[in-house]
Image (tube, rainbow, N blue to C red):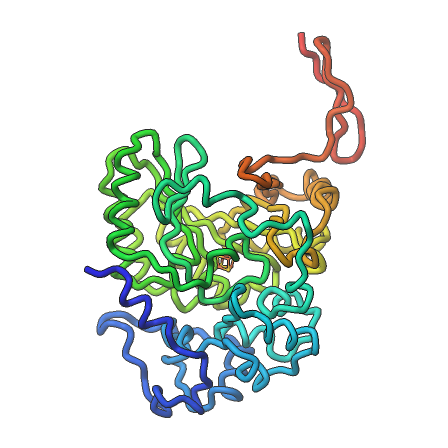
Length: 413
Ligand code: SF4
C-alpha cells in the first residue's frame, strides 16, 4: 500500500465555499463513510447557523464528513473575506505568508471565529497578524534542534527510551505559534520508503520503548495509512506504548469517527496527547470527539502552550483545566512558547507561567494541574519549573511555603 497517496488527494482542495465549488454538487451527499458507519450528526447551533449562511447548499452529512471539512478549508484572503472583516494587520500578514507557515482553517473552526473581533483568542490562534513577520535575534527556525537529532527522515531521537515520529507535515488547521513551523505545512511528504526506514530504525533500537507519532497532525492521514503505520510499530516487540499527538478533536472533531476508533483500539496501549489552548475550544462537537476517544479506552492528556493575551491568566487557565477534566482529558503539560521566528507577540515571560502555576496549585484539584515546562532552546529537552516553595533546606530540615504562604517544616533526620 502506498501510504501517502490518499492523504495527498484529501488535502489538495483549495478551500472553496461549497456554493461556489465545482467539485461538489449542490446538496449532494459525500459518500466517505462506509455502509455500516453511522455519520456523526452533531452540529452545534453556532456551526449550524454558519453552515446555513456560508455553505447553504451543503448537507449535515457533508459538514460532518472530515474530508469535506479539509477540502473546503479556508486558505486565502479571498476565502476569509467572505465570512469576516479582516484587519489591515491580518491582510498584510496573509499577503506575506509565502515560504512561511500556510493559512488553513477548517469550516468547523471558522464557525467558531467568523464574527469575532481581532483580539478573540481562537481567531488569534489561526489568523496571522503582521507581528508574525517580525523576527528577533533569539528566535530560530528549529529552536529545539530537532534536525540534528534526526537519524532518519521523520524520526527525532533525543531522549534515551523514546522517539518522536513525524509521519506527516500536514495539519487541518495551522496554529500561528507552531513549534515546527519550519517544516509543518510544507509538502515534503514521507513516502512508503521513508516509513519503512523509520520502522527499521525503531526496530534496531531496542532501548526505545515509547513512540510518539506526531507531525503535522497524524489524524489527517487516511484510516488506511494510520493502520499501516500503527501496525508496523506495534509489531516491534520492544515497543511498550504508542502515543499520538493531535489537535484534530479541537479543530476537526468530525475526524473522530467510529471507524477510526475501531482502528486505533487494535493498538492499545495507545495514549492520545491533545492540544488545547483556550476553554472556548471545548464545544459540543469537541466534547463528543473526546468522549468517543475516552470510551475507546485511550488515556487522554492535554498540552497547552502559554500564549500572551490568549490564556496567560489564572482564571482562563483554570477554566480550561476544569473543562478538560470534565471531558476526561488530563492536563499534562503547560509549555513556555518556543522561540520560533515571529512568535514575540505570543510569548510571555517564564515568570508569568510560574505565577499561573502558583495560582493553580492548592486552589484546584491536583488532576487539573499540568506540569509547566520550558523546552530548552538548542535541544536541551523539557525542563519542569515550579514556583519557589522551598524557603530553606539543609541536613536538619526543609522549610517550605504552602499555597497560602504559610511556612511548614519537615525534618530530614
Ligand atoms: S496542529 Fe500542531 S503541528 Fe499542526 S500547526 Fe498546530 S501546533 Fe503545529
